[in-house]
Image (cartoon, rainbow, N blue to C red):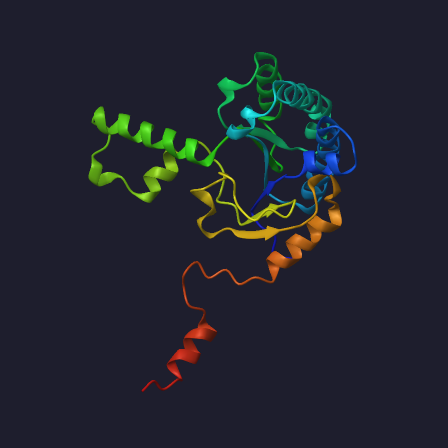
Length: 246
């Protein structure tokens, strides 16, 4: 199977899943965390090089304070619990997003886990936390503008490769496949620059119901897609050359 070098997942629907079952939204996030653990394990077993989970967006800060506080505590607990699993499976843990906005206790756990797993050589597990694609691009523009002001760059030297070099998630390849659960069909400010040629797989299931079989189905769908990146395939090219236009 031709697996993606970078799989990214928008884990959507925890709250709606819980509400539909007459549970609190908080319980939905607990069940979502369980689903994430299973998918992380499955991805590592498949040998995926990079997995990014859209864990908490910049827009999520506008949610009720109780929910945000619970999510931060849940995040801390899950990361601490999984440190031994990350080490056992040779996974490297990394984060993209505005870390400075996170509570100090959350940052400490995250930084400790990043340091602990920094020498691992298996799958890169990346959490997009307090992350927004527009915000990432804005910060990239500021960084490049400062380099122009200081004389390190001229405006004429700004190319796509320069932008890629200065974007926060430059340690990751562009996502080959983005999965979104819950039935919503949009990127919601996720990897806006990087997703230019990503294959996108939408699923009606809410995230807590997402299983390994759903992951395998998404990957199977991906392997059947023809990724042309704007080019014409040899088959299509031959068809055009053999046609007569009047």
